[in-house]
Length: 265
Ligand SMILES: Nc1nc2c(ncn2[C@@H]2O[C@H](COP(=O)(O)OP(=O)(O)OP(=O)(O)O)[C@@H](O)[C@H]2O)c(=O)[nH]1
Ligand SMILES: [Mg+2]
Image (cartoon, rainbow, N blue to C red; front, side):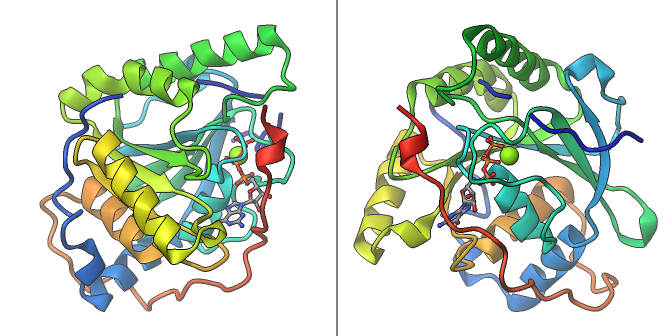
């Protein structure tokens, strides 16, 4: 197993399928969310690779976190798994430069994988590197066999950018074939309640009625909802049983602070 990486950037709209959970997630029974969070807390670093062909072929479902650089992908993974430094998060955009895999599963039995991908759209990255990363991303998103779901992290203060649209174009065929898709509107703490509600409605329209969740690592908004969705994606058909061991309450005090819109042109 290699050490987790560090350093670079990149890359892919449409009509996204509605997730069965989206209508009821907010009213979920607390025990279901606790189970999902306990499962997420089992996350362990698995491996890192600069591109797809270096990754091990896996049979378990894989969920990839994608989005603009600095959107909060790594922070979201840390928040969901209730681990402060599982994925590298940083104020400086471009922190994640490799494909990083984290295994999940109770009792040491891996039953799913979370993937933290490098962000795209960071202006300070040389063009050559940007293009290389777009290729790596596109390759991963199109070809990764066990890819089961994609979480698109989007800062609602920016909305969907051109590169988000490119990414959506890349994944559309797979979404139409059943790949799960969720838009997480990050840094909701930066919005007023009415701005948040507006951002949610706009993105729901853009997502063609697909699932959209407002999320904040600092205010701990949307954590349970996202946790349940990821659990459902990876355990479809499996009954919710309470063999999950004692609940792991989310840690308080993740280091999320903000960022900045200023890092991007
Ligand atoms: N206010 C606020 N800041 C956040 C939140 N989530 C992340 N941040 C901050 O945003 C910055 C970027 O977070 P990362 O998680 O590193 O972003 P990333 O999408 O992984 O970035 P790359 O690895 O460059 O693609 C950090 O300063 C985080 O603390 C949030 O919910 N609220
Ligand atoms: Mg990152």
